[in-house]
Amino acid sequence: MSMNERVEAGVLYVVATPIGNLADISQRALAVLAGVDFIAAEDTRHSGRLLQHYQITSKTLALHDHNERDRAPDVVARLMQGKSVALISDAGTPLISDPGFHLVRLARESGIKVMPVPGASAMIAALSAAGLPSDRFVFEGFLPSKSTARKKRLEAMGMETRTLIFYEAPHRLLDTLADMVAVLGADRHVVLARELTKTFETIKSDAAAALLEWASDDPDQQKGEVVLLVAGVSVAEDDVPDGEAQRILKILLDELPLSQASALAAKITGGKKKPLYQLGLSLAELKGNA
Image (cartoon, rainbow, N blue to C red; front, side):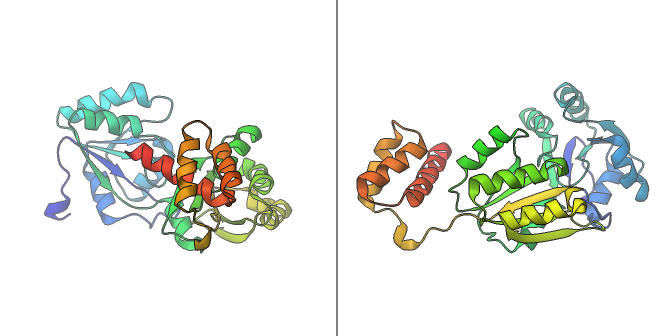
């Protein structure tokens, strides 16, 4: 380990681990895991296989969804005493649809130095190989497990122009694809990335309805970790709302939900609802960042 990679006392390291292939771990991550006083793992038994493979003997403690709020103060106390801690999840980058947010926030609020040790992430790996626009994208994590709530969430993103990325449990894959067909349309382009970096890695791209049929006909595609990527809607340059349409939309947004405001603005101006809806999303995003 070089001088610059020496583990520092009292530092919380957020360490990415492989999502499948154990060779997908950096030399820096291995050095940190071997050098810290404690490793806070989502599942100590699961992570034990990785640590054993690389002959890492650092002490481990469990930190998962069910105990993180209670365990975080204890971990921060150890950090304030000068102990070094590495946070890892079962696979990939901690906090990305995995535990760790409460610990990292408490550590930062307590003046603890938090250092990322980057590496594998299923959503980025899937995006890099999907063939969908990657300059702008939205990561939504897991959709709701119930169909009604799932459809409502999909409807809210139906006019999104950016690439949409979701994680999904294998037992819900067919239901989610069916809801995508119902809400986003049979022809919406979807990519299914399954078991990335593992033996049965599959990346399949097709229209939503065709992808649903393909996955339904092959039970093997309903197994393992799944990433779903959905193409955003296209808005032509000549569809961009003019100044008057933008002014009317802004007024309506003060009184109405986005869907109603964009529909009414389109009716008043004779414009198209899709670009007005997208403009409304952008305005809401800007307002939220203000």
